[in-house]
Image (cartoon, rainbow, N blue to C red; front, side, top):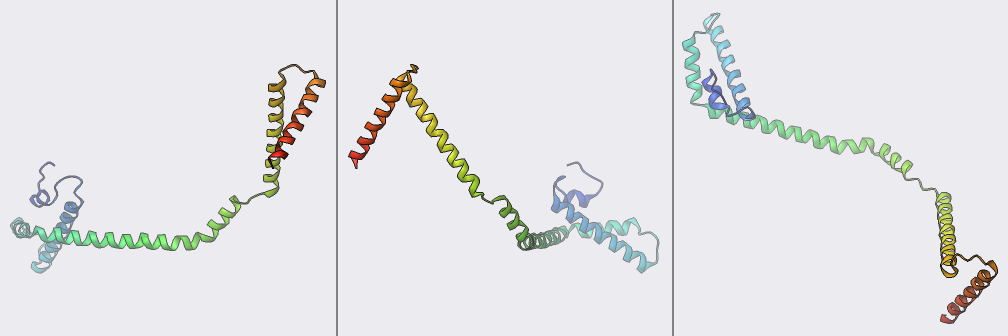
Length: 168
């Protein structure tokens, strides 16, 4: 980071992303402005002499760790209160929206039994029909002599039925 005209800024702020340093410097500036206002009031002057400001700066450079410590405490306190707010929101939010959420889930999860049974029956019927056609075409080829095919189909069905009955 480039050097600036402020010695204190250069000592407190390490780079552009140094939040702690920037916050520490703002606390220093606040204290400096407060000091200048008190000086003006106490000595009844419009401007604070540069030598007085330089003296203040030199004295505060020795105690920069005080600003860093205060900045850290304030940021931690703010962070803690922010976490508490977020936690409180997370706890309260489900209570408010619980009924709406349950209604939404119920509306999406409504199961239609009639439709499910109909779909299942249709699927089973189509599967059976396709299986019969494939079996018919495989066993007898593409020769559509219906008498022979019909008799063979019935005979095969009876034999299969007998085998099943015998296995029980």
